[in-house]
Image (cartoon, rainbow, N blue to C red):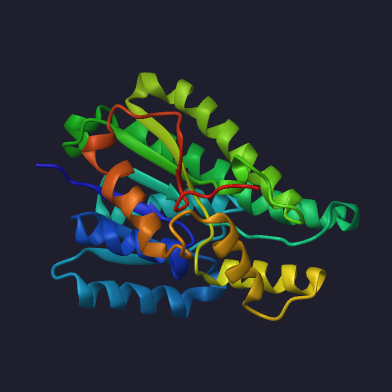
Length: 271
């Protein structure tokens, strides 16, 4: 019998929360993680999932993914409370809306620290734990361990005024491919998922920034980008992303998939 345990970073809200719920529904024991200052929201999410999924095993751990020490502690506490780690979902990320000629060194450090360094910390500490656990079938009854990271549609085609954010997500693609090759001998697959335009607080932030720069009211940029670019004609939801991540990438059907960045964007067409 498999004993699947997952950590989902940045999962107190938005896409991460939807992924964590889907994993719990599919039988995973799940650790909800977000920054320490969101402790109340973390535990509210834990209780919400427990109330929706009978007999679910869900814990909450506050940790800052930009800190290697914090991520190491996050992995250790999860394993101690839930059992062998079989899935890491490095979902935490931030967005920044700014023309490139206005970007400062501080801006670059902030975005890359969360979106790239934070993901690197999650990838590497999860991999060390998985390797230490030994063969995945013997340790947890699964064929392979899995590591997943949050990229974005801008990892394939950057958006104007989202240059540094786009660059950080291109870096996620590169790290994912490199990590997948190094981890394959250890029976660890490494993939990323690339959401498009999603109805979350992050995209509300992007909408507001684009509106200020391009002279649109709140909500207009989100509608404009959705109408102009998305073939299916609607903004995606966190549950759309959770379907790819929880329904496929975290499931045994993807055991032979590694080094990929899979897009879930409703068919975005750039013009």
